[in-house]
Length: 100
Ligand SMILES: Nc1ncnc2c1ncn2[C@@H]1O[C@H](COP(=O)(O)OP(=O)(O)O)[C@@H](O)[C@H]1O
Ligand SMILES: [Mg+2]
Image (tube, rainbow, N blue to C red):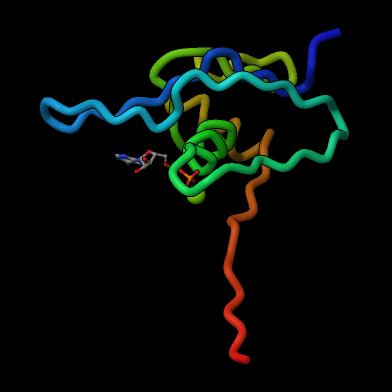
């Protein structure tokens, strides 16, 4: 059986004039249904980029993102609205500042 979430060779590039910034350079992972998963990496590694793509808030330049059998990398902007509304939940990360 295939995984609940599959990212296959996911690339996200930002073109800024002559310069291409690779925010995610070929990401591959699988998450099983019910699995608790943490994405870790240094600042700038592409964590936010990958989560935004998985959350349907951004699209990848290349690669496949499959969630519950649906290839969300192939969805139109309108279909992505339905995906965000009905299929996926997103809780923004936050920082708590503590004065000592
Ligand atoms: N909108 C954008 N335009 C250009 N570069 C971006 C953009 N968003 C992210 N990046 C670049 O992509 C890389 C990954 O960013 P990001 O996903 O925010 O990393 P993380 O969340 O792991 O710190 C960084 O080098 C960042 O500067
Ligand atoms: Mg981030």
